[in-house]
Amino acid sequence: MELRSQCAMISKNGRIHMASYEWKDGRFHNVIDLPENYDVRDFSTGDYLPSKSEFDVGKYDEIRPGMYKTDLFGGTRTLHVGIDIGGPVGTPCMSFEEGEIAYFGYNPSDGDYGHVVVTRHEFEGKPIWALYGHLNSDSILEKRSGQNVKRGEVVGWIGDKHENGGWEPHLHFQLSWFDPMTHDMPGVVDPRDRAEALAKFPDPRIVLGPIY
Image (cartoon, rainbow, N blue to C red; front, side, top):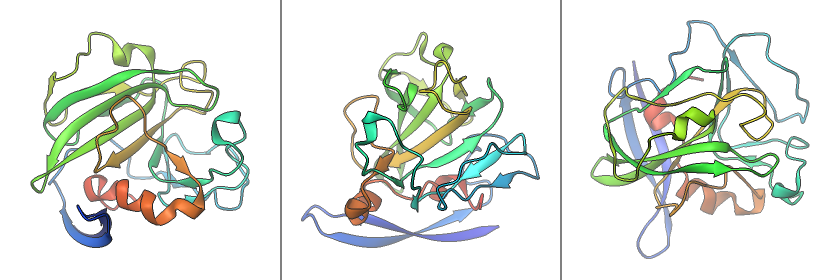
């Protein structure tokens, strides 16, 4: 299967432009091994109900009114700029390509990521960072910055609510063209900042493929 994805980027002069990337089946390793059948969620209505499937996917570039109620989001951040992959606690989360551990740690605020690993990779000759959020505590043990990761290597596991920021178990997977400098990225932004956010944080399907 082939997929050509348009992806916003910010150039050195600060202008936003579009780049096109071609995804081909097998080009990257699965981040999570999804079954043949899973739910694709729609949170744009502001209604949240637990998934009826063991695995589900939440969309990129989706405004989610009413979902982000803790002080962390300030009442204005509703645009989701990663992809959520829901699955059982302990589900392995793998590196889509060889790279290295850039950052890892724990974001403790209510509604935050909980345990996080950020990896760094080369993508079409450019550095790109990948955030794995809402992991369990074992995911950050024995990690060190600069540690090599292989394609398909497990970098963490989906965490439970008590350790993942208080969410139903899922992986928040997000890409960034810019070095986050720490184990954090804004996974939800103010819709007024959409153009800049999508340029900084490209559609994860350029490595995940057409999962919806």
